Length: 251
Length: 315
Image (tube, rainbow over all chains, first blue to last red):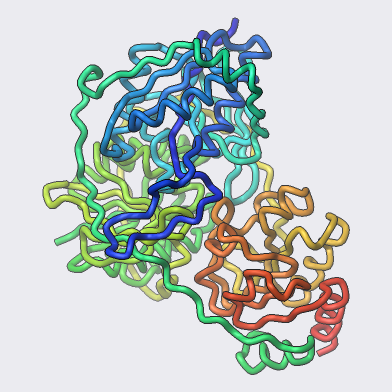
């Protein structure tokens, strides 16, 4: 029996190729005019959900975003990749991870998916929190850092990339899976699919409609550039390198 | 008075060094009592009790904790925190990253990830945008509990000459059975651990093949060093993923880091910026890694590596 539907989180972030810098007054980061993309880990989560559906193991893939109106562009891209429909919960001020998880939890109540797939972290705030928080609020299993996902009935076997190596766990559905880089390589979007995606349903909701009042409990005080390392010296050959290392007591 | 609970990371018999670094971070919080919870054996709890600065070690013994699954550990930790802790810290390792947000959600508490500096009991610094920006954050004064993961590369281990009191907790918490451990494939354990080794030798894509990557392993063996790899080398299949150093791999702070055939992409540099001494060996004199290296050697790694290994082993 196939999974009814998979919910996939899609976050709009500054493209990974853009080198982000803090503003001179420390009040934020310079993102004006920067290329925006789907968070790369979320793209991998979507690719996996689409493959599960294409294998006949799921019937519907819904992409959900939380962000500004402009985040519709990333949801359209996700629809062009093959998602069936999209939901944007429109917010102007970014939510903290726990509020993001509360929003996703409300969408779960609404859509009743058996599987939720998210990127392991977003490459802007690098929090790596939302999936685990969602699993806790939902009181369901979490499988983070997934590098292999096999569905067998109502159990998913997930291989996880952990510090010590590769861990394999079984989780009962419904469950939350957060994905790591090596799970798959996302497909490229083809032009006809972009045209088709324009006709797919993209619903826009408000936090009020979901009954959520955002809390802002963590305040950004200052944004700084990292302290650069001092540039060192070039040595001419291996013998000099070893002599320098010996001087410093390192070999 | 701040009461900080640190979640110990261990493998069933040994305390992970990351725990001693979390204690070091917690000791920087003003007016704090630092306790450690060990969800594991008395032997591990005894090791935690030697960490300097720790007031009390709470041991929770339960066969359900053998696999250290987040869904099983989190409700127990949340129950302990509710007994009156103001902060709960775990290491920013895959163990802590998996576990701590689940604890935070159960407590309805805000979490700060990857804290690298303590400015006050509520104000911390953390990297965002892959380390391109350092963000100072402050948690609102009326929040009862702050959950955090500690960027272990930013803190030294505390010495192991303490003698904390030890208690065994009898937590009564309902635990889920929806998540089950199946197996663990461990990395090669003959070598020093990448995250705690004093010296690390890393190879990049320029090694060209898994066969040629053995040159890195030979140098590491001669130095008694751990082996690392850039993401490009891992993606090319020259080295297994658990050896990956960088933003999407391990963040490390060895005394000596030798980067061979690694260009120095920002995501790699994020993983080694706390290394004491960085040595770069690369044939491209314009490679960005030379901007951050303490010692650089421009040349062909296929002649430099054997010479380095040979000279070191004949010492």
